[in-house]
Amino acid sequence: MLTRYRVMAYVTGVLLILLTLGVIAKYVLDINGAAAFVEIVGIAHGWLYIVYLVFAFDLGSKARYPVMRQLWVLLAGTIPTAAFFVERRVSRELEAKVADPAPVAAKV
Image (cartoon, rainbow, N blue to C red):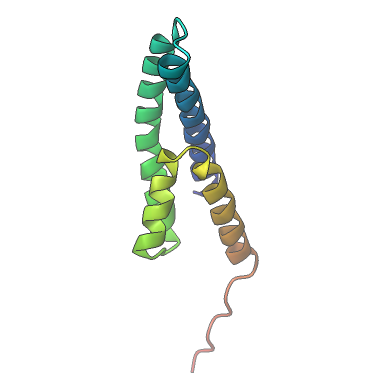
């Protein structure tokens, strides 16, 4: 569950950075061929972001994240570079939970 989220976070993050650079190349630098690049990367990012949403929601629901935290994880794929930072933080948290689970209450 964590691995597939991490993979999709990196894929989504890289595609979003490429899309941002493509938009700059298209509208600011007026580079030939940038429009086609933006179209292809934009479509790829859009479809893969949906997969990211599914995996991130699954991870958040199984980790029992509060609603606002879940929203932040889901929206991280729309802010350039945010996916990398959020993924790292989520991974550290969940790996720590798995390594040191809370003690089970003694049965009476």
